[in-house]
Length: 295
Length: 166
Ligand SMILES: Cc1cc2nc3c(=O)[nH]c(=O)nc-3n(C[C@H](O)[C@H](O)[C@H](O)COP(=O)(O)OP(=O)(O)OC[C@H]3O[C@@H](n4cnc5c(N)ncnc54)[C@H](O)[C@@H]3O)c2cc1C
Ligand code: FES
Ligand code: FES
Image 1 (cartoon, rainbow over the protein chains, first blue to last red):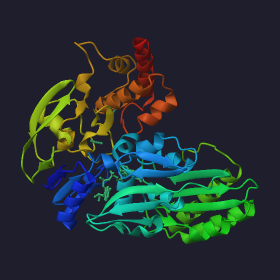
Image 2 (tube, chains in turn red, orange; image 1 turned 180 degrees about the horizontal axis):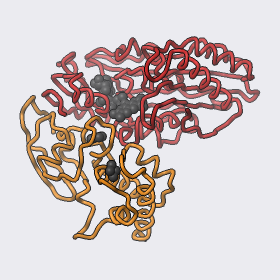
Image 3 (cartoon, chains in turn orange, red; image 1 turned 180 degrees about the vertical axis):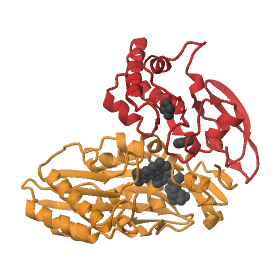
Image 4 (tube, protein in one colour; image 1 turned 120 degrees about the vertical axis):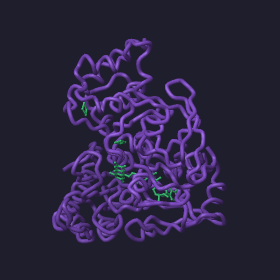
């Protein structure tokens, strides 16, 4: 299989890439890891006239940490997040190692996953839970938006055709207290997209009270979802079994899955509840239990 | 490669198994087909052609990549390694020998990809456990062996490579 013919322009600087997207707009697609775009093009489900390869743009690479805040260049590969060591952000590595398979993770990028906006992708839920921000830029200006304003619909984001994602910012957790985070993914087989995915993170003060909480959901709606109602219930409280159970129920009611051959609507909702409960219990126990995935 | 117009054929130059080679490719030519058809190195296999099976795995600048899901023009100026680069003067690479000795292959279709993924793993750290190997090759599907002998082969090859390094 091979794609429809296209013009290929490799950018070496961000300015060059921005000039290209400005010039070609709707006719062009950015090529990052190519792990979503090229399969679509091979199946002729996408046929852009121009591909703008950003792999050589050094300004878009690298992960830096300042005061606990993580700045991810748009070209950050899934494997970089899998093997990086950021103890203040336990959720990122645990989630990264569950995306696709190791070879796809060597190429696929965080920003590419966000721009593709598959509701079953993993980064969307994780970065919603972490209250991340997305920085985008066109030829004239840059803007940043919280993750919760980024996804519009399935495969549709707030990104304009003349814009490029330049960075993803993950805020620092509170300077004191305990940070916990887990990602649970129900998959039919290793390396598959989620049937249901749940990202849970919370920071607790020394008395065990929740300072902040984040819950993101994959594959249970038209976009990745943020369970804001469940998050609100948790803040300021202690993680008692009753509170955890209530938050898990609320999160399940905030999901809106579709029944398909991977599971019925009821089943997927029930799995959201189970995973939110499991994640919060693990955080309450202070457990840094390594949970690869469950099913 | 800077600019390739639609349907134009351009020379792509890369270092493959230590040798610099040039051949023509269109922008839409996938690396797997470039290697197999244009460079006539058919050791790299195309299995699923949908980024799932890993049979087409090659190393680009030392990193395992599914070559059915990368453009040939993206490899211009880069270093590519394929299964043909493993043996030296007719002597099998420790990985190849270990697959031979342990029946790490049956039909052999998945083997080039298995070998290249395992090579990158063992170069990083030759002392691997079963768990580490199983995770590392989870993007390479084998329909024949049931993986047990593949995992055994990779562990044994690692032990041999560790000794050779000392
Ligand atoms: C076999 C297989 C299994 C997979 N399993 C999973 C899984 O379990 N979970 C999961 O989350 N994902 C999975 N994926 C998808 C994978 O994570 C992709 O890497 C990711 O979705 C896209 O990232 P990319 O860098 O490859 O983007 P590309 O394929 O290069 O691009 C995807 C889209 O994003 C746009 N884009 C890319 N970068 C930018 C940017 N900086 N600014 C603006 N637009 C941009 C492109 O134009 C394109 O429209 C799987 C893929 C495969 C092939
Ligand atoms: S042929 Fe490339 S992954 Fe199967
Ligand atoms: S040996 Fe036949 S597919 Fe692996």
